[in-house]
Image (spheres, rainbow over the protein chains, first blue to last red):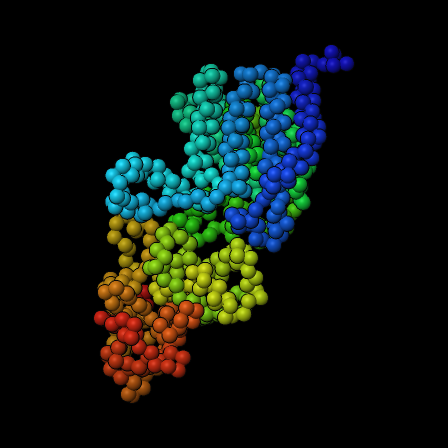
Length: 377
Length: 242
């Protein structure tokens, strides 16, 4: 029967089919993953998570983390097994895996690591003056810019605890973003050297597109990471986002990317099923950073950077809420929100977790639809 | 008497609207030296900000503030470095007074800090950048005679290391003496670890020498010079209230 379908309909059938396949595979091995996470006690602890003190969130203690592996592993495996088109899929998968690796290390260090020391600027300055070994003094002077960067990153709210610190995360995310920029600008050739602006056309910003791509990948990965704070929130919002990317990729004729987005959305359906309150597992940084990077790079690969703020609306809103909070704290000495990211603000205002999540889903869905409409122009 | 708005601010500091309520403790950032922190955590917060911060800290510490009695609540605040210093308290009360009387914030009547960056920062963080030494500068306030004292005036006690400011709430004149009813945020040595905070008292003066007057708080005579010598004590009026 499919022989009678036009080729585009055939590709659409494939895209949806792979999405269903990914969902089924994920559903099948999810119980194994849950068992594995419990067995190795990869569960949420309360030492460094202030939000777990909120009465309604206490039930989350001892819930397995790193559930995002369900999506990351499924997507990576399917991409390698079916190997649709290396030119389009290997770099996004590579960047996703690199970001997921960073997130995974952070998750594991937060659970099994030991407290990491962070020397203050004044301590470093004192040591430069008084340390008895000249070699140590020289080392401290040479590494002073790094120390400065490290301390400055604490303004972004990094808890100098067990996990990967913000300055380390930023560096590794910068590498992931730079790889994405290299691939898009130099490997995908000339069509990707300009930004497509809906209703306007192509806008050339020259080589500046390279740092822009890097920043977009870093920001989006962090935005998804920040949004992963309630059961089902990030997963439920990522489904329509990747679904819309699959649709837009198909419309633009990038069938391989459409399949990649479709299997991600399919796998996320299975993930969200197990992540809905009370969650059987949580995404963890392994999933949120990996999927955030994949989201950005997949949007960039179909030249839809301009609609990212729409199709990733709530993720960006969550990230902006953190920036606003940090700015308010630093420049005004006040909290703008009761707690950031913004979903905790509403929770502290008395909204139930379910109400917050569902409202966020609905708002996000509305903006995704708007993003698709804009992206089609 | 101070305006109802300023009195309301004072009342909120005296009885923080949280759980059983308690007097706002004294906290000075000189020891902690927190930079760029929340106002409530550096001794410059309004009552609302202190309460909000206490609630957020309580969430982290798994403490139920609603069920704490006043004494335990005060201990909680002191242990978490939540409180107000003398100039922070003076700023919030006199800012409320200025808004009520003049319709403008207090900062509008005070000279800017020197340097573009300091001016820029101080515009956004007024409470943090208004110190006693800033209030006593001739551009911002003038010395007034005891006979002319009025509510909203301040008594500044200067020392090379440590300055202090006291707000006049009301004034009573009679033939022999002038009695100033004052309020301030202070930590007396006898307050111990948890007893400090906002104190009300009276200063009875028979002449212009402020330090020779009789300072009484909670029925006891108090002496600022017991803690450290006061090099200069003046009754001043801010330009905002002239």
